Length: 500
Image (cartoon, rainbow, N blue to C red; front, side):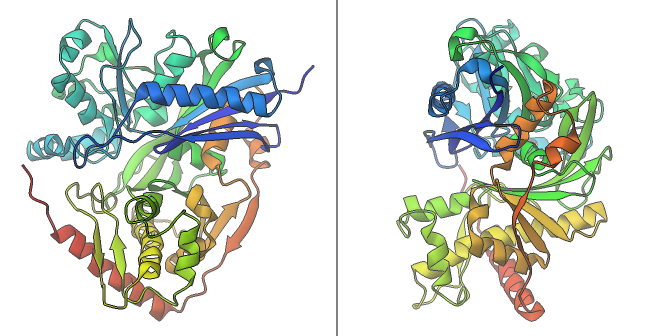
C-alpha cells in the first residue's frame, strides 16, 4: 500500500499555505501564495472569498505535484484559518453576496459602542467569553445583512449561509454538501455560548440574525465530510478544523492545562490552555474554546494583539524603510538600543488588554538623530512589549506563574526579536524546529480523526525544540524600557481621530 500523508490548509490573513506532512510531522511539500487585500475605506479591510478559494485550491494541487503524490495518498485534510473573518454566500449559486469582512476591519465599531452603551458588556462576556469589539464576526454579519441589498430578505428565506473562512472552505471542498464549523471558530463569533455550547438565541435576536444561516458546530477532530472527487482527484476526508491560534496551541503540544504559546503572525496571539476550566478574565483577556476533542471541549485564555508582523510589512510596503522582512533584524542590530523611539502599531485599534477600537498608530521619542534602524528596532520591540502586556494579564487571571513561552509563526524566525522577547518577559522562550505550528495543529487534529496518529502522546513526540532563548537583560534596563512603552501606550490611547 502506498505511503499515506496529511494535507494541511493554513488560510491566513495575508496568504495561504498548504503543507503535506508525513507521520513524523516532516514537511514533504509546501506551497504559499499571498491573497489580495482590499481597503475600500479607512479602517475597512476585505478579502475576496472566491480569491481565497482559488488560491487554496491551486496550492493544494501544487503540493501534490511538487511531492509527486496522488490525491488517494492523502489520508485526510486539516483546515486552519484566520478567525472572525466573515463570509456570507448564496446557498444556491455558491456566490458570496459581499467580500469577506476581515477580522481587522473596524467598520462596525459604532455598532459595538451602541451595544456597550445599551449595557450588554457583561452579558456578552458571560455568554461568549469575549469583549464587545468589531474584531468578532457577529457585528460583521449584522452589517452585511443590513447593508447588502436583499441580503436580509434572502437570509430570512433561508437562501444565504454564514461562515468564517473554515466554513467557506469546507463548503467548497465538499461541493456544497457540508455547512459546518468547529467549536474554536464558533467561539470567536460573539454569537456562541461557550458554556452551553450552542448558538445563543438572545444574541442572534439582538443582531436580527436568522438561526438558519448559522453553520453546524462540530468537534475540531472529526470527519466533516469528503471532498468532491473532481476537485483533487479523489474523495478525501476533511477531518480537522480549528481557528489558527487554537491550532497553533495544539500544534505546539500544549494539550496540558497551564501550557502557553504565542504566535507571531500578522497579529500576535498568546493562548493558555485552561483545560475544562472556563476562566473569566478580569484583565482584558478573552475566554475562548481551545478545541473540541472526543466529545469534550477544552478552554483557553487568550490575549490578542492586532498588529505584530503587519508592522514590519508596513515598514516594507508603505514607508519603504526595508526591502524585505528579514532586513528588519539586520537593521535592528545595527544600533545599540532604540534611542528612546517607541512604535505603537495601533493601525486598527488596540487589542488586549486595552481594547480601544479608536486608538491609532503612534511613533514617539523621535529626535533629529532617529533613523530607519531605530524605526525597524522600534517596530520589532513593539511586538515584544505588546506580548508582555498580555502575559502580565494572563498571570493575573490564571493565578499561575508562567516560566516558559512556546513560540511560532513567521516572526518567530527573527532571532533578535526572540531574544528581546525573552529579555522583556524574563522567562525562557522555546522555538520549535517546525515554526508552522498552526498548520501542524490542523494536521494533527485531522490525523487523529482518521487514525493516522493514534493518540495525543504519539503526536507530542513529533514536536521538537530548535532553540531555547534565556533572559539576559539587567532588571533595571528591563524596567526602563517597559516604562517607556507605557508612556507610548498612553500617547496612542490619548489620540482620537475625528469620527463622522
